[in-house]
Image (cartoon, rainbow, N blue to C red; front, top):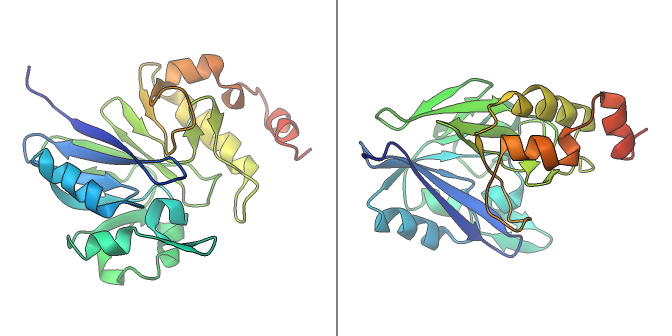
Length: 225
């Protein structure tokens, strides 16, 4: 059977980040999601599989996902990648201004239901999922969800950081991600679990953060009520 999607998961850095390569086997073009920590390894992984990186997709602009200064240390990221490949960077419109080191001409603002293609039949759909950050977004491709720091296996992203919103997180989890089909495969932004992937169906049954029947219950559990 001919493959219809290329999807590679790479764990990078001491914060157990997952970086993803999403590719179209018919064009050999790939998008890299949240390139940070080990740019050489990421580029070489794509090359080794005969893919050309043609796009960068950002789930959110925290430095462990995009590169930059964090806790007094510098993390290589999008800037270093663009020095090797001149490609557009897709980031939610509410967070475009945060990537100050990226030329304006390289940044493309996204919003909910934005469609991104890789030159063939593979279509990536943006799902805007604010909560962890205002511009957090997930990428749905076929029945795979690259979820960044919105939904983890057994938990969800933090909402106690500057510009986080527990109210938005509840809405994103309940009214967006939990509306996806049970067999949708979850690819989280960090390796925080005993396995690298899950499904929406499994999370619906086992993840306590998606089981609250009301916003007030969610806020109470998160310590906000």
